[in-house]
Length: 366
Image (cartoon, rainbow, N blue to C red; front, side):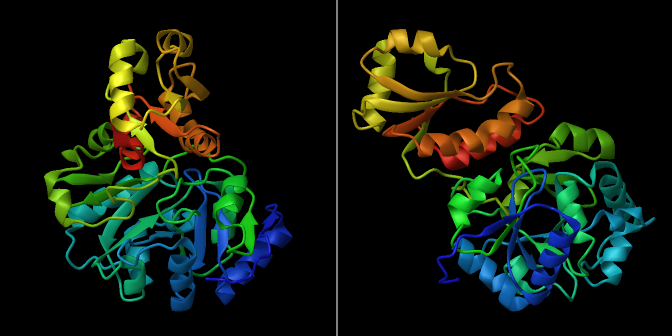
């Protein structure tokens, strides 16, 4: 980890700056980059010291594998998987032509975009990246700034989220600066991330598709497109390790609790009983709401100070809720509230599974 206390430079994505950062990555420096999901901490995937620096900078345990990011030029090939295999990124020797065809179709349809696919790794992929596993996670981000940078280097970028391990994922350069500002040298500006939660991680096999981490691309979308049975967090996935699959993740520093029902549906007595059991009689509570009426909640529980209160989407949109999720959790964490409280995600389609997954990993149930 760098001992320098200098603050990272935020660079606009000009041609000159992109060339500079491509050169820095080639030399082994780390660069925080925007993607459509969250900001990533990018490193040259073919330099062991650079990969080690990612783990050290993030304080990330070595058993948590990284995702490799590639330029969309691979997708122009008739057979993107064979192109990756030719470059010794993946190994397709155990895959049938039928499965290869299905995975290529997935890549052509959903990528570039927020989809990560877990495949058998090739000879050029370090065990450091895969945490000693036989599989490697690959993805083609759709963010134009990320793609511009990827096209300038002749190696994939290993890029986990640009935050310290287990902390809230960053969706703006300001978030990255807060997390890693004195630990890295460069942050590439790309505005606020469009999606706001990490990519869907998919493990394809001959008979089924297993979603190891839900994201914007849903179980229904994958199953409909592939016509292959798709499982979300199948029991089979217990034997498959994946980036972002740890039980605790994305967590604020303050105590963060999750109600199993909408908060305004609780009577004052019910609310107080839950608060007293879990929140140590705290009076100032930060709220993250989906559907509850904040005014009604205040009227029912006048003994508590609810401040601040964030409504993820006033239009009840799963897309807007996902985009705001990490931003609002971070603002709650930085507030003067003693404890944080959220209610359950109400969405059963679209990004609902992804939002529920992130909340469960970031909070404890009341």
